[in-house]
Image 1 (cartoon, one colour):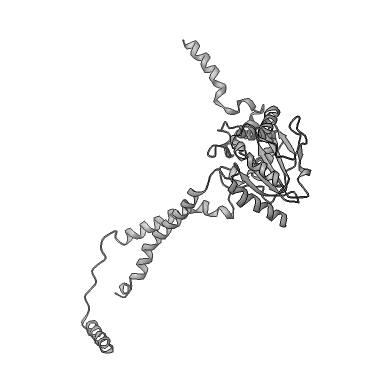
Image 2 (cartoon, rainbow over the protein chains, first blue to last red; image 1 turned 120 degrees about the vertical axis):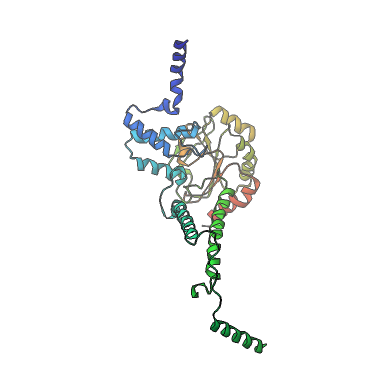
Length: 155
Length: 186
């Protein structure tokens, strides 16, 4: 029984990685290929990386990544190759540039704004009504009466 | 007492700010929700056609290469016999070819020659030249990620328009033909 299970497990091994059919012999290069494939979006299945996807196009792109690595391209060169054809969209981590400033900073800005709002709210004493306004003094009352009387004349 | 004299305008602003931020964020999210995630903006617009030289589908010459896509406005359609939506748009391609608006070429993507020939025999063959991209490498050069796709190439050999997915009569009339006219007017 255990022997049979072990045998079945042995069979299941290769199915764990989609890239098993195209591994590079050099482990360091293979690690780079996997790392890069994790950063590249599968265009067919959208929210998967090409490393995780078994779509045809993803497999082709993984092969290209490995070809470029064996040809001696650097990581940025390979990512540039992909963005030249598929745009920034192919990168799972969006690049930092003028067009994406809002994307990168909006969460921080909103969080800061919210924290500031909360801080101010509690500094003012939460939801309690502000202190009662002191009644008018004698002089103020007289001034107000004068103003109101003048207003009445104008009508 | 003086600082409490005119509290209204400042406080109102304080109340409006969260609402303004909320509206701005929902505005962005709302627009994002309405975008079609399947349509990826092409990185190749206004770029020259990639370098390629494809053989024809066996038994259906001629093939297609970069040099063919210069000198006049032309259309390149990426198709495959295994692709259902390609059949849907095919009558429109036949119509485009009949009207002689611009030369129409095909990029036969990841297809077997026999299937491709059968497809064209069955549905009609609107293409002047067809390159057979059996392993899909040239398709990747063109940034193809889903078949069918249709490109408009200007006289200088630059990609000026790309349509992803099957062409519908509306797409031809409102997008493809105007893109061809603009390319011709340049």
